Length: 304
Image 1 (tube, helix red, strand yellow):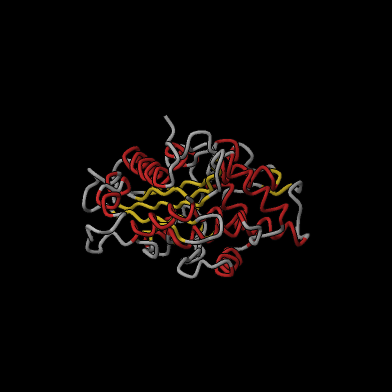
Image 2: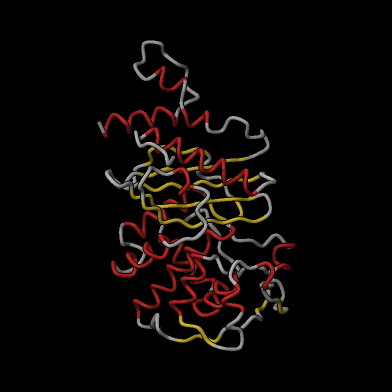
């Protein structure tokens, strides 16, 4: 049955082919819920997605190599680099780091800061001028998507090292060049970018314990599982599934990347990236519909 479902999903991926009425999958292809999930989405909206099975095989993908602004998806790569440093003994998760809010733009070294009103987590801003545990900063960077925690950690591990580690894990089309909220860099077109395919490979490296040590990868999956922003892939995932995910959003971009653990079936990895939605709620709803359609193609009922 699993092999049959995999074949069905591969048929969807080649949906532009001519339909053969003698093809036993033709009816299913004509009525694919994956296409139906995108009904009503404006033509100028771009959607890219990739779904891997537990072995890393591509079950379905569209626009997998389209490069988009990474937004907060890049924080997964930062987390991996931090845990690699922990594995190497550079520092421990219990170490205290100074929390500062003054960073140098990659354009010319001029100072910038992360505005508290634009950040999702006031806790880290309350620690400015004090210290915070590495463990707490990583947790806040992922579960609350704290921009300030992200920049403090990037200062500690180096953006170039984050990028090098990401490349070593298969992110060949991605570029991680700077911290968050570097407005001068943004205006100069210097951004962190990635693709759905690269993000799927990054999550697969965590899932298969290749991103860092087994203990570190398990801990990273636990952190992703405590994600507080759950209106995308988690909302469309199978009933009872555990979802370890990271969202990312910036003007007209909304993404979600997840490792999905159904309650009674094999895990899979799903990454959905969008560009062009003017409403965050519309983007989240489309991501949830797509996640539900893909899980439905596997035979899992979506959440009620």
